[in-house]
Length: 173
Image (cartoon, rainbow, N blue to C red; front, side, top):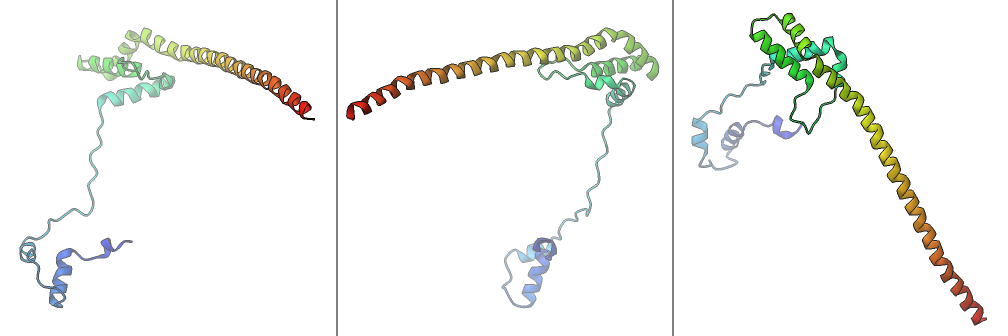
């Protein structure tokens, strides 16, 4: 534990030092002693948890359809995630007077085509990953062949130079 936590407040320490005549009374002492420090709470209260109706609807949808949690979120799109759209539509219907369950059923029927599209995205992403991997493999093979070509070129360039060195050594002998 550091000394800051164990030390007395400034005013109490100064009062002790003044009684023992260790220091002269500073100019600020009278003003500070007339104004008591503000009382601070010892423990901060926990703020209330924010719970939005939309979030509870989303959790309810994901409980019934756990596979929807694996639908990817497109980061560069301004289009909201399918599950969020579902919750918004369910909220609209609940505002129009439908019960939570009726609104869920109606939203599910209305957004069935979007649900299918969203699930197809997962499958196309797997195909997309495969096609990207195939392209990368082609580039790696090209890079390896180019590297081999450079190595062969260097060895061909070094070979005549090596032959010239050998010829120079023979002349010297």
